[in-house]
Image (cartoon, rainbow, N blue to C red; front, side, top):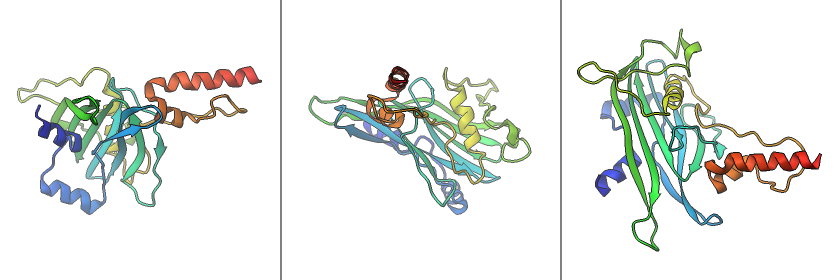
Length: 241
């Protein structure tokens, strides 16, 4: 993959004809697929920042979410409240981020899954954001009306994608739940909440040695250390009781 194609893939996974772009703007659906490379001064490392975003109307939906490199949900750093709907929902930050991006037009779906990580190209220089495409599916199909009469199944199902000869294209291992969540997002009319980024609940009792919230732990230590940090907090609480 050339540097220019990586740059394009970091900005957009799916590319749309102008008619689709105009339609999304007209109905007020604002997904944010662009990623950025950020430096954490205290941790002395680079991380990838993404914004879970998007939503739907009855006839069209567009949603962008993020997972870790294996497809697991990332803890959000913060949610983004707004008077508008179908826009930004939550910020996620991690050393490696996998973007799951989906467009729905009625019952037809497009899906792109790409993995992004910082890679050192030259010692002493800012790293580059490396992009790797894991999956691309067009003209996927799901007969259910998740935005209407079948909304109780939202989050439990996903569209199927096929080759030109009619064989089903399998998703990358570990990404079924993430794709189901994004499928829910592209059917969430007037969406105002994240569908895959998760909240890590803070401890509810007493002062602890590590006073950071789990969201702060996630931002500073990265999602792979979140569970360890939360366990440490809970152990400190237990010993203080």
